[in-house]
Length: 207
Image 1 (cartoon, rainbow, N blue to C red):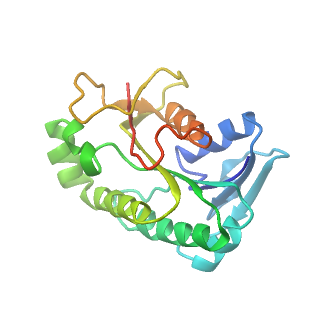
Image 2 (image 1 turned 90 degrees about the vertical axis):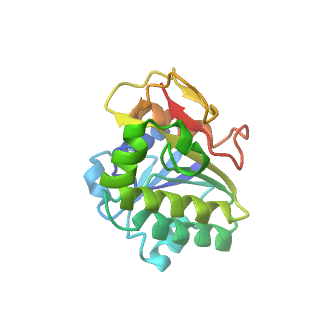
């Protein structure tokens, strides 16, 4: 499949690129400085651009079969929401339907899954702007007619790819570790390229 990854140099994006290449996808890595990937592969195309640039996003998206979004912006800003808005507009314009976007566990109706610490200290205080960005990002996607899937991972770890994680659980699910490796997040996101199980849904991810 010919895919483009937005946020390709981020902590999850790097895993997406590497795993997608091992799965023989044609990969376009969109980032402000794609050279930061330090990966060279015959199936990899580096595309330097800014998601705030609507024209650059549209040109980059054209001709692909599917789009993956793993944008990050630290604790502040609206990179996720604004960038995603430009991506979905470009997809609609070029007739590309498949979108898989990584947001965060706790967004939308998954908020009840979180502990007091994550609800009130992390997302309620320390990461409040970033959380709001995720929420707006999801709303933008849900308002489209695209074939979208929003993946909501728990807190990231640097652990290995295991393939052994919980997904699609209800917000009432107990005994979740509320963490998952970035490698496993990428593993699940890539599965959604050809699996309609969670079409127009927001599966959570956690150990």
